[in-house]
Amino acid sequence: MKAYAMDLRQRVLKDCDAGMTTAAVATKFSLSPAWVRRLKQRRRQTGQVAPVTQRHGPRPAWQAHADRIRLAVAQAPDLTLREYIERFALPISKSALARALVALGLSRKKSRSRPASKNART
Image (tube, rainbow, N blue to C red; front, side, top):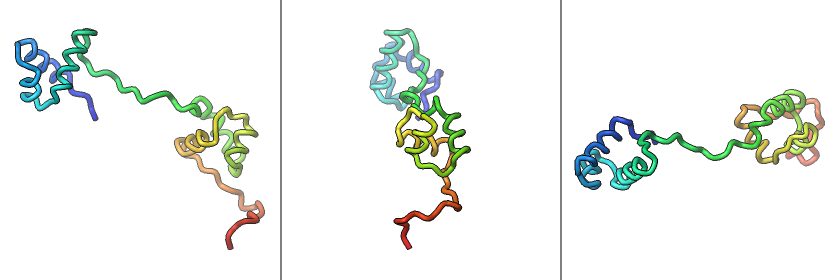
């Protein structure tokens, strides 16, 4: 959901400063009374009314090793996740590596020259 525009925020605060109640301002601008209260509280505590940039949590552990992951897949596209971690000394888990491969758009393809798996279905 996008943040409310600065002009709306300023109009809301102007009406609040003019003596309108929180509920009346919320109804006038089709907003939540809670949002109007939080906007007033934020201005009172910090002096800021601009929208805060969104925080999406910590960066994934694999992002620091993206170049090494790309290189590993380019050198040996037919390894398992565990083999990539061991051979290329990647300090991440198998699930993190799997998410990294999807996010980087990399696929692991088994070599056609390898013998078939012994437990392959026929």
